[in-house]
Length: 131
Image (cartoon, rainbow, N blue to C red; front, side):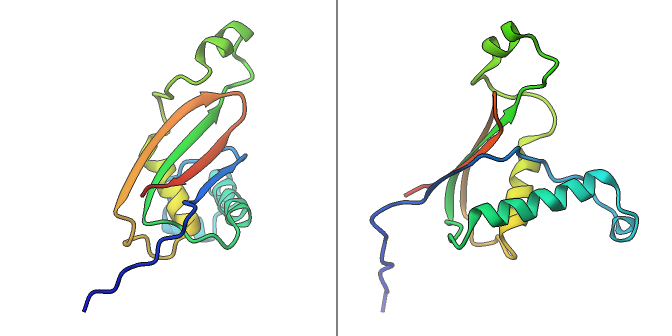
């Protein structure tokens, strides 16, 4: 017997104003020797969990990371780069890993991800459920 899964009428669509952070490469030593990058990463994960709330992470998502532009850039360069693809380090897969590790104990049920990263004035993460 096949069970039909009841679909909600409104797909999930959340935008969180938070500076995305890529997952750093960690070692066993990071459990006791608190490197600043690892401490910032754990603080980012905690903040992301708080902002996410009780929402269930969908099994198919479209996720957009907007990376804040450096303060050192000129106004002209900021205007030119706003909305353009972020094509440098950190890599997109590290942003995805940090998102999944912050919100999920087991991420094996996620079967479809569309992701991209762009430049903007403020950093944010937008998650939309794919139907």
